[in-house]
Length: 317
Image 1 (cartoon, rainbow, N blue to C red):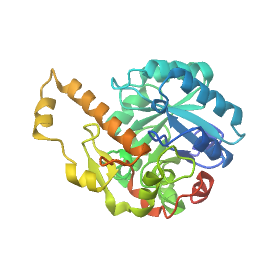
Image 2 (cartoon, one colour):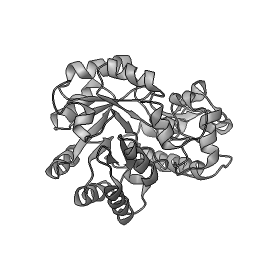
Image 3 (cartoon, rainbow, N blue to C red):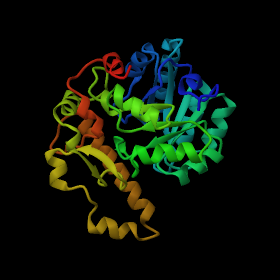
Image 4 (tube, rainbow, N blue to C red):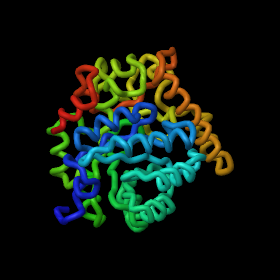
């Protein structure tokens, strides 16, 4: 992976092999602006904007503040739960971004249309099987979501996933999950990754668009307080084990499991679970309620205080 055009720095024109990961409700223009000033890349979920004009405005703002060695992208959920994905894609292509990260679903249309505008496409994957499919579609890199990722995670350890993807797929691999400091970043690079997508350490940043209580929770809780729940979307998701999470448990109920086995109802049950879970997360991110569900990964174990994005980036350099 040393050939020209194959390092993350060469692909995005950045100085350091880091993408500050897109985080639901957390990421914003101020964060990505600060990230680019540190010569790395930042990404925002398209779903952080309620309307397409708001998304376009954010992209235009980032274009104006982009630095010579910084880059920015947008994350798009491709499956049926995201009813606006095509509009989000068209907005990215019309206004212009450096890269798109796809999550879930089939990214074929995104890859095709983005490449027409010279936009790179990186695809989240959790297995070799999935990776080979998106690689065959022509994506530019794989984002290897391992079992230490915050939010929706994979099942494999980075030590298992990254080397296998490097061996089986002839495109760059970017690690996602389990990086909280410079040493852990080096571990991922030594496994064969060309860079890392890092999210959870940036939750407790001054620029993040969330409540101070959520930020402080990432300081007060540690890696041992992270649990995996299926209560948010029906798929494994890591959250802080708050009293409310302990109360409701992390497994789906017998009724939810029964309904999911019904072929006719399965997709609707999953969609309703996703919508309700997202609403709970959104509410908790903005203010403290008795239903506190804070998404985070085990790398918050390195978070000791709330500080600026630039200071957090320095932790990895």
